Length: 106
Image (cartoon, rainbow, N blue to C red; front, side, top):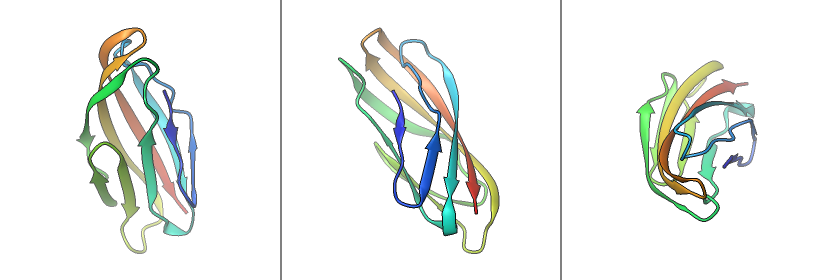
């Protein structure tokens, strides 16, 4: 599964499998301090049961439920991080994956 980008954001990487209970680091670039949406595609032959914040960003706000939006603090430029834990079932079976976002705000 992957995450999808929204306007003024580039998302690089981020392929993970719930059944493998793995962790992945995803690079996000926000241009002009834009908010970035973190939306997840539905697993093949599966579903998400929950998505939870593991680590909140230090220089912005993270809002959402089954998808999230990161908004950098006013005037912030630099690198921020946050992490989400996704649980559910994919084609290989049930499990959870942790997605860590390394966010560069330009």
